[in-house]
View 1 (cartoon, rainbow, N blue to C red):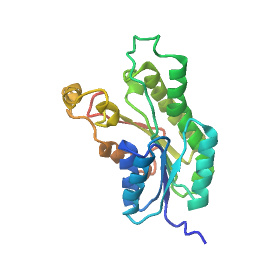
View 2 (cartoon, rainbow, N blue to C red; view 1 turned 60 degrees about the vertical axis):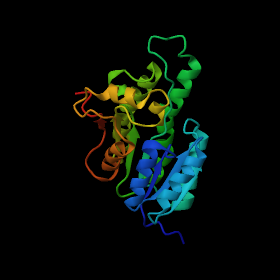
View 3 (cartoon, rainbow, N blue to C red; view 1 turned 45 degrees about the horizontal axis):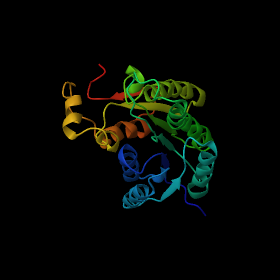
Length: 249
């Protein structure tokens, strides 16, 4: 007989960075954890091994969140393995670094890829997870968005647009799915593989030197906010929590 007394969480894109930090934090809090990835299998399995050190059950599931059939299959596996889901963290994301004035490079294919993962993906995950979440006594969804969705800056026009739409969808779903709480975290620059691929440490710190708190976020900084919205509040819903060292004040 399945022992489903422990709470369960699904973190998409949890092979590295913010996703990994969040999965490990939830494992430490006593959650069973679903580690999701689309390409980074080795990193996802490392995340799972680290999470298992905290005593819970952990499964690794490959699914491209932009494909609804793969998301549906993932949630069926979650139900079969854990029999419940209490927290969904929509962290999986993608981008292309394209100057905003370079309209020709931002092709339809690029738009489709970015919107597929960053916007349709969270929707597919929420839709597939909702039946399990409704059975929880404290269900929560946290979408990992970006300040790019507030100010229109960021790696590309399509990325900023996808995150702006995710912020709006967070509010729509908070109304539609109540009492399931749905919130978003909007990070500023994160010291992660994404930015390290395009800038040096000096360039990264130069970018944030005039912020009130003049440092880039670490993945754990964003995990702090995600875990708070998932477990640390019972009345907060439909909110987009900015975590950017004061940049957008």
